[in-house]
Image (cartoon, rainbow, N blue to C red; front, side, top):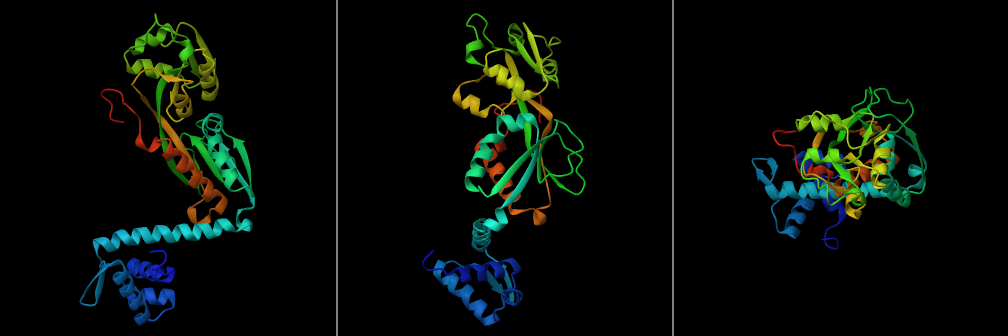
Length: 308
């Protein structure tokens, strides 16, 4: 296909397929009606597939045509993006990302590493925002927020729903204190952070107590997770925050049940048509990373009786 099908033929098909009208597509591409029709016919012959139904001067994509249009549009978009990426002038400059402390520590560094390796022309600057912060700083290109912020004039999209479950370092666990049910967690030190998720966790399971054998309290989630890595206690963590730890074995999951948290992770940005190429590339890398971690698939298991 790469050798036999010129790019202009694919552009011709895309325009006709999008409009389902040869004259309009010809006007867009500054071609004659006859030339454009001929290119589409040649493409159908090359593919040996009918891409359009032509009845009574009306054109409609066949099922094969609809599938191929999607493929061609994606390919042309990728080419256009690639051309932009080659231009150092469009990439050079600063990208300001507002982000919560836990996101900046636990899973954002992997994205930063890939991004700066590919686009060294970009100067990244990160500013810290609080979890559940409603009003955001005035100057930023992108923001990664825990909880939906108030961001008038910006595009706000939910990236990810948080799901919490208990994890701990294998070094903490004792053979004479197995963890088979939520009540068993109270035999161990518990690591808390300011939003008190342990209270919600135990309440869901009908347990009034939320204090472990000993208790350590932190401001931020990343602090309690780091304490868990050091073997200081059990922490409730989101599956995204500890995905790398679970793969390495530095933390282990203790129970199958998960607790959906009302607040999710939100991305705040300019509207797509006004975003810089720097921001668009960062968002693409961000979403690719989340997909690789399996976050789009949801939790491994959910709590009985809940349909979140």
